Amino acid sequence: MELPDMDRSGNEIPCLPKKLAMELLQAASKLKVSRIAIVGGVVRDWLLHIDHLEPIRTPGDVDLVVEGSAIQLGEVLQQIFSSERLTKWRVHPSFDTVEITIDGFPLDIASARKEHYPAPGENPIVRSDFLEHDLSRRDFTVNAIALDLSNLELIDPYQGRSALANKELTFLHSNSIADDPTRVIRGARYSARLGLVLTDQSKYQVRSTLKNWPWNWQPGDPPELAPPALGTRLRMELEIMLEREPWEIAISNLQEWGALVLLDDGLQKDTHWLRRLHWAQRLRLPLLPVLLSGAKDALALAARLQLPRQHQQLLKESLELQSFLKSNEFANKCLVHQPSDWCQALEHANWTPQTIIFTACLGVRHWQQLLRWWGRWRHIKSNVSARMLMDKGWQSGPELGTELKRLRLEEINRREKKKII
Image (cartoon, rainbow, N blue to C red; front, side, top):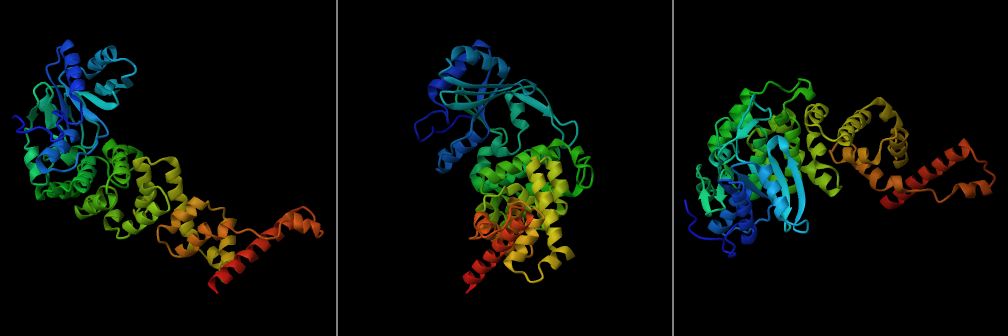
């Protein structure tokens, strides 16, 4: 299948200078590599540009697939290019892939391969194969497109170009989600960023797969036993979604598809996630733990996804603070509910500022007071210093510290009363 026209920018190859493309082909010929092709998102976005006049999107890297050894090709490239032109080199032997940067262009070179999933959600077992088989293992039809560098032939066995024209997003296989549930998150990302609509058939696959739950692990089992696609790899996709994509649309898609069950039943029913995340964004808090706070068991979910330790600790301390706000101990300390009462209650328990502002953005009861403590009250100091008290005859010791705290609390109440008036 030949391309009917070229890139309107005048460049024959998407996101790759012609000179560099020729050098890659020459290096491949030294190894007698039969084919080298650009695959995935670069080709997809290029077709959206030439077919539908959408703006060119700058890729994070250019994905190349070779019928042969990617590592051997990388070694040849390392010999050909000087250190001034080749500025990055990273090899992943277990997958026969190479990350390399030439002339400022990041390239991710992989060997064409076929994969087999030993069990749903586990990492696949891969072996070398042909380019067409490499395309058959991908997630969506719009990503199973390749551009052969040797002749600029478009290889599109699953009509991905037609799906782009119809703005459709379709899983490549009937077992796509069972094999790799992270594909659901990627689907939400593509839908949000590219304006593609998940087809009814694919929505049915989402709902039926999640209803049948084909994985050997399920919520309630030890978090550390979850397969990678329900654990660390799922977290990585969520992080990309929250860092790089229109996440409001992506999460709405996941909820509309019934896909948040993949994380937790509580998140699927959560109606407050948008408010929480907007507050978190405004306050520069980490978005993922704020999202997960709506889960039935946020701590177990955070452990399953292997969130960073500080984020798991933040969720744990926030739950403890919420429990404290509902306790009799809290009620006894804050009967009057003056600012000084709040300061004493929060500071006596040594809650960290981040824990308090994190909890405030969740919209819990008394969130306004938590926000005021974080933004205003904790910064107020007494106008009377220790030196001033000692000049009046106070001795250094616990009594001096107690008096300084009392004066600070009086000052907080005074300023707050003046602010209200």
